[in-house]
Length: 64
Image (cartoon, rainbow, N blue to C red; front, side, top):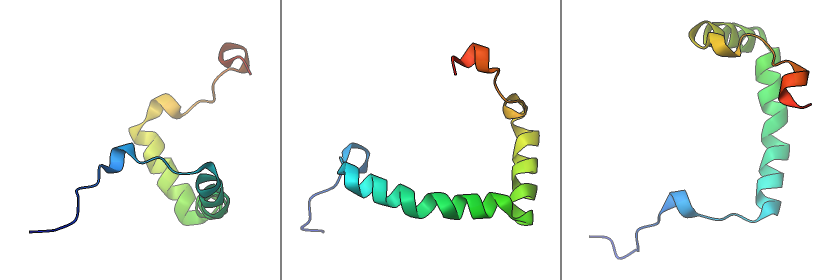
């Protein structure tokens, strides 16, 4: 038996600074992956399974 309380990981609130720092670290790594040949192949296979994302949304419809 554990003497520690059970943590509900779905309801943890993190400070904005922690999330911002994490995003600054992980975003360049994600970009590097998808710019690589392996990442491009992975994304191509993913698009085959999710054709609804194959075309970019029309800017007039999205409000951008």
